[in-house]
Image (cartoon, rainbow, N blue to C red; front, side):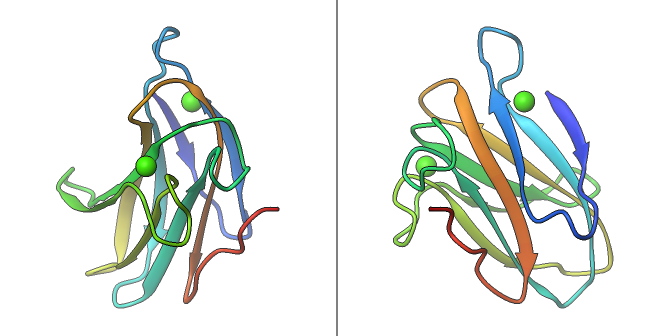
Length: 119
Ligand SMILES: [Ca+2]
Ligand SMILES: [Ca+2]
């Protein structure tokens, strides 16, 4: 597990998941504003942002309580698109994993809309 700190202005980050290498999920720390709608996405094989076959994306609050999870989406196929509203100002964690195995992906979070799909 790797911990990344998302910073404002970072539109996307490319990372890998490696089950054999002890890196089965990646966690991203984000500071969000309460009441704001956020959209986060993982671009794997379906969206041609990496090689992950079936990624998922979950959001947790600072206490580790899961708030929402996305796996597949109508727009993104096997890649998750997670749209959620932060209940309060604070630190949240976004977890990227995959149901099928290792590979690469691009992770993006934006607010107020759907992230632009990679081509
Ligand atoms: Ca990783
Ligand atoms: Ca999926």
